[in-house]
Length: 172
Figure 1 (tube, rainbow, N blue to C red):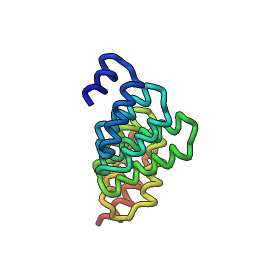
Figure 2: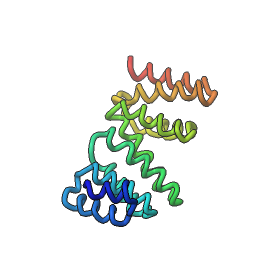
Figure 3: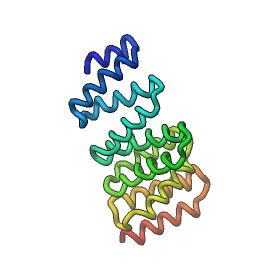
């Protein structure tokens, strides 16, 4: 892994770094650090397909918090590649992590805020809530986030109030 870091950072030779990291991942497919570096190197080398594969593998293992970010990166990558359906599916999978782990709400909100795409955040969050059990661990935090975003950032206080009311009905 140290050799890959040299070829990645000190002497940028992305193909060589990519080959080394692929060997590391082949030896231990669950090495999230190596897989993450492989995805990064593939992106830098312009190998979008390999990067997408690495992000997909990252998104399929680990805790919900560990899975959410690779799903969102994969969604962004698929959108850049012109595959809107794959992008939407990856983003939906990221939002599905909220049901189990409320801390994912902050990660997703931050992701969309950094891209100035809060309207898309709201749409995806509302779709996730429609799939989520009423009393799922992340339902209340997601509704509260939506209420704030709708009221403060998107100028829709009425819709924000609806989410607060639904939150109150779902969590007496």
